[in-house]
Image (cartoon, rainbow, N blue to C red; front, side, top):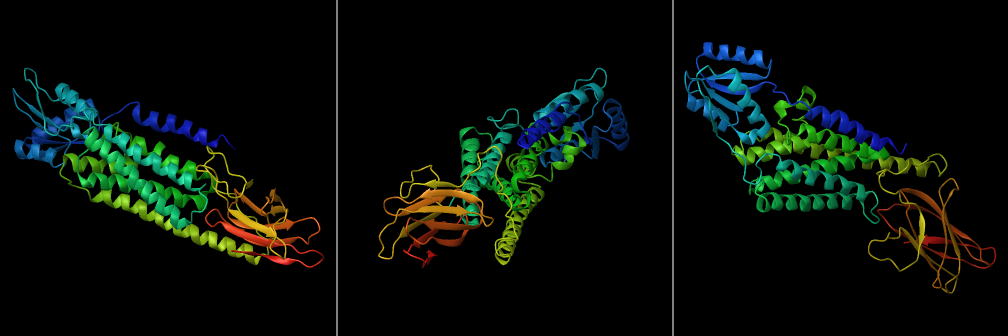
Amino acid sequence: MGLWLPAIFLAGLLFSFLLAFHNPTPHHIEVAVAAPPATTAQLQSQLDTAIPGGFTLQPVDSAAEARSAVLNHDAVAAFVPATHHPQLYGAKADGAAMESIIREVFTSAAQKPGATLAFHELVSTRPGDSLGISPLYLLMGCTLPAYFLVVAMQRAVGFSRRAHVATMVGGGAVAALACYLTGAYGMDAIPQHPLALLYLFLLTQAVSLTSYGFVPFLGPFFPGAAVTLFVLLGVPSSGGTVPVDLLNGFFRFLHPLLPMGNAADALRLVDYFDGRQLGRPTAVLCAWIATGAALIVLGYLKQLRQLVREAQAGMTGYVPAPPAEDPTVELPEPVALPPHRHHFGEQLPILTGRVSGLAGEPLPATITVTDPHGRQLVRTHTDQNGEYAATGFHDGFAIVVAGAPGRQPAASRLLLSPATPVNQDFILTPGQQAVPGYAR
């Protein structure tokens, strides 16, 4: 069972990255052609012979209109045929690999004998992004921390669901700002525009909120779903390394659906095409965020119903599900802690308390914590002040029993949760009478 996550990575690298990148081929690349319909049809036939289905030609009335189609992001390239000096216009901002293939194909298939094809760059990339792939690494710089923050929240003690969400929002803002400042001002790889920062932040929230929403429904398998969606499928289909029109049909289908591809499109449109056609990337990123928020609410309702059923079953009819943890991280286990000595980076206590006699004197006592079925979770002893502490518990009910020599044992049933630390004190009396424990 511990090998399933490495298996997912192996399959993803072989059948996702390798499949997407090993043989980039044009697929219906739109090229504006300033020529009569008959000339355009003849050129389309020549290109279909060279690369079937590789190019879709759009006839326009003039060379100026053809150039405008590229500048407005309505076409990837423009071609103006002429007897001796045909003109080809491209946009490196749409991908250096795309531009290279277009130049090669039109030089061999569309150039007439004795003519010299002249190429004109209309939309070049930034000085800090000569190959047009730097934004991909900034997008990964937003995606991976957003995912790992969700993993970290599964181990956070004293954090409610609301605090988890607030932490992911704040952490996403920090990651987006760091990527933006590095990419825009440190490397000149993305535009110094507030919309670029906004789309980086939207990407972090789409990843973190959706991953967090998976936890109640997928349990320990949520890392596999998140990594597959946002990394193993998200990176190849993003168009960040190989332009989308050069990918096979499966990844071209995924591109407008997954967050990273839409964030990549948004950065490109903001930077090179004056923010045109931002509607789809914005809507898709917001839809992922809304989906994550809905999953979080449904997960809360699901957990609430489970706790109600457990309480109604009197601790015997319901077996709590195992916690959702990333299998690459060591799972926390219930363990005793020394009271009042908690250093930065160490686990914080979930259960604390004090054992005393009727006069308030501290007692040397044994504390035993069991699950509702009697399985011992942790056993510890009080210190010289009669205090104890323990941590590593997951959501669910537990029985805490305090016992001391010559004293009547006391027990209390508690709802333990990493999000809400509990203090449980006990008063142990001599003889047969027991004073029930009380919680604060």
